[in-house]
Length: 406
Image 1 (cartoon, one colour):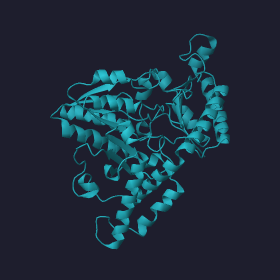
Image 2 (image 1 turned 90 degrees about the vertical axis):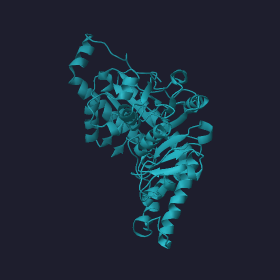
Image 3 (image 1 turned 180 degrees about the vertical axis):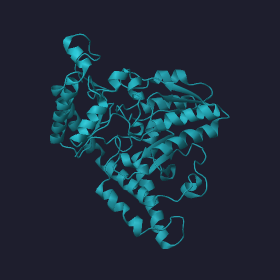
Image 4 (image 1 turned 30 degrees about the vertical axis):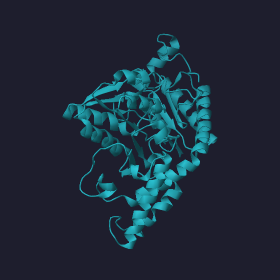
């Protein structure tokens, strides 16, 4: 199997699994209890909290464990709205956020009269800081812009965006599920007040995430019923998961630079091969020859004209190559990706899209095998496409005018 869907989830690192195992059947005590075995669980949570905090230069007591990134996003947006709606009900976000943000905003809009501004992005997926400046109103209470996009890999200018929000006395939240542990982030330097992350995106376990809440932010609990997480998130802690998250965070910090270099090398090689073997391919999101680099190191998102994305995925799977068309959370949707539509793709081109997200464990040989398989698949699909036949005859044009250069 060749696994190229690391934006959906990653393989749990063996060291993470080893860290987790004792807390299933050995040190299984409830961390809220007072006996010795419970102390092991309590210490594991404290150690993991410190490890997770170090990834973003935060303090341990600013980290709150959750069931994942979606819960953290919900908590951040809903709790800020609840705490500050006497001041105002205006929230600013972007058109390309994860549905955990977009659907939460829609919920607040529908049920509580929140007013939501959805900032547009340019053709590479960037939010323009000037657009944020223009959108802030006296009743704005929150700006929530993702650190990096999960589909096209765009790294947003969150430091600049947070500074603009703060200049107006507005809180800034970032969904960093795709960025946490992948690229450098720092609470003080970047200026975010709240940040969401999830363990399974950085070789940790599924079912555990976190919300960073700056000490300067006063918001309420999301779950009620117990005093866990310093009375802000009730429920017995997922001790094995939290221990695994801590180890994954520790490894991410150690390996970040080398991992990024390896992934960039593999991604560049894969795209070079695809360009050589397949015509009419469009690169979606930012190029990676910019300075500074503004794209996640492992992300390659391409539209292959005249070849349906769903068909390519099925045929790649038959070759034991795992990829995706976009966000795993939107899998099964009949509508084109909202991210691809936001950057200006037509419905037809958006439906011809593949997201290939690599890990440092992939090899150049796997990239060559993938490019060869994809080229054969595209050739087969285009032979069955009336539109491609018309294109060859010159009856219809290309939407992208050949291969996108980087």
